[in-house]
Length: 151
Image 1 (tube, rainbow, N blue to C red):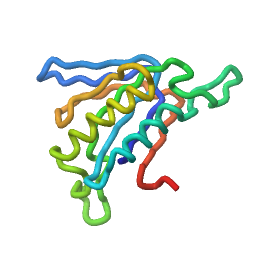
Image 2 (image 1 turned 120 degrees about the vertical axis):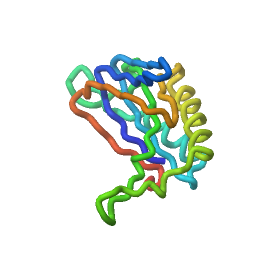
Image 3 (image 1 turned 60 degrees about the horizontal axis):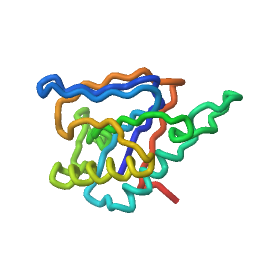
C-alpha cells in the first residue's frame, strides 16, 4: 500500500456527475493506492502511521503533534496512479496497481481502519470515479508512506 499524506488547511473531493462532495477543514488529505499483495496488516500499519504521524505544529512551531492531537479531519481518496511506472517510454504503466475487484475491498477496509484509529468518521472519495480534488496544502507538508518499505 502506498499513500501520499498532505497536511491541509482544507480539502474536498467532488464527483459532479453523481452530485457527490466530501470536504474537510484543517487536517490531512490522504491519497491511497493498493497492489494485489496488500494485506490487512499493510492497511492497519498504514492507518496507524497516518493517525500517529507528528506533522502538525505544537505551541513552539515544531512539528510534534498528530492529526489526532489537533482534532484534525482526514479525507481519503483512492489514486491508483501512485503505482505508475515511468521506467520505459513516456506513457506511465499502471500494471502494478490492483484492479478494482481487489482494490475496492482494500480501500473500504482501509477507510474503516483509519476511522477506528482516529475514533471518528473521515471524508472519502468514490473509488474509480472521475474525481475533482481541491486542497490548500499547509506548509507545504507532503509525506509518502509505503507499507512495503517498513523496516
